Image (cartoon, rainbow, N blue to C red; front, side, top):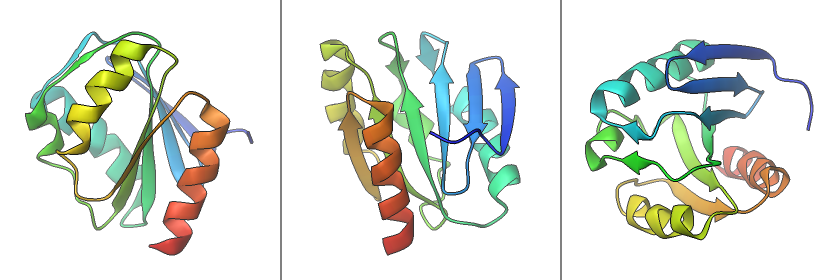
Length: 124
């Protein structure tokens, strides 16, 4: 994986932005709509109406509220990938998939997720 174009630190995790995708390393056990708005705002400011994929790198299970998905603009955030080797995270991702209208997938490796993200952006 290339070096990020820019890295942002938030109270909920670190966001590394690349050309077509960002990798958000979640460090918070819970994400509600309030936290999500702040995270999405950083992404939208960085990408400035350019299409991108949000890759959530989750080393630990986290409680993600359905409300956290309400402020996503699928015109620009065209895909979401969740990366984890934890089976409980995968089970949670199945629920989250129904909350997003764009491309959505689960991966056990960041490399597979970034390859997928580049393809999603090119096809959208």
